[in-house]
Image (cartoon, rainbow, N blue to C red; front, top):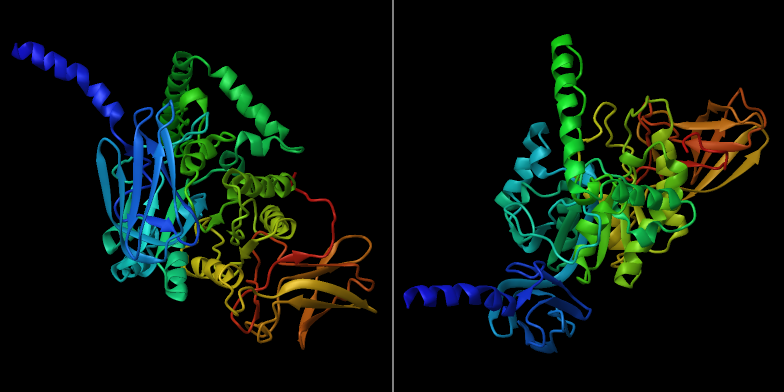
Length: 520
């Protein structure tokens, strides 16, 4: 009889588990819900099961729904006031209660390694450890999305030891969180006096096409990405063949690595282990599928983005790709939320005097002109010629926050350095005027650097630049009839660019011409 009872209970376990109400993992203790909008809460349950969602805090609100025939449900709670100490309860045949929930502004922090770079990686003078030691703040909450490249859009993600859960901002939690994300969130929390939730969805060395949906890439000029992912999925339809090919590549790499070590040469990069369908983190759509789609339809305020290094050398395509990615995310959520990006830091890349990074920066700036509600943080003064991961991340987060404070929250503050407005040719000189002059134009040093001019031959030469009120006057002995101006048009400027406004913000690199790009 005991054996029969055991068998009966074992047979019942799957049924009981299926009946359990299970909210999406974005809902947990210490979570942050978006203020000022209807709050979607969703998950799974038994088909036809009634689910009641209650948010209790400054007021109590409730929503009731019924799971559909596949067991999916979504409730919508009314707008809630900013604050901490809320309790979120989800009840069906079982009841789940999430405590220490906050209502405030939620920001997605995405991109590649410079967004992913954590406080514990800021090693100069132990900056990261010092910042983390003083970062205890119950009004800032942190969430890391697990890294997953996948061939199809996902609705959820696993909860792991390092990701997939909300954590309150404390020294032991923030030390392993995005440095740029933290500095941004810290400044928003302080300036707006509200709780802030930061969702980090980032992965080093990844291109923008990996963060864009198939639908978003299905536009003129980006067809090759759709063709590439289709070819990848077709070629890797048999998982056994995929693994066999990977093992073969791995064996060849090990042999090459041993030989390189013996010869005192650089060890080649190991082959990437493909995920399902043969996709990797660099495959078109793969990170959108695994790390962005799985956030829908969570309500959030806006997004910050630091990426572009992996697309340097493809500036012409990025002028289409990057706005397409932003538009794609907005379409997926159904609103034109604020989007703030970081322009690439100075770095030698393929050579300090080359222009692959300059052209990519120009493509990033182009997105802010093409799309509404898109801002940019300029960091020409915090790059490192030999390190693609410059250590000084605080100005990056702070300048992103300045843009958000001005453009999203309506503060009357200067949020940008001087930005090109127009040029006028006066004889052999050029007079350049700017927006975002702030308290006035400033040179950090004795002589302005980084300006070049060209004549009809389109050959650019260094120009002498002088501040005249709110303008810059340029001249060059080699160019008597100037037709175009460029500023900061190199990967890494030597000497360092030193044009600012008196608010301490660096000027935006620019070009006045539309000559063909060298990187396509």
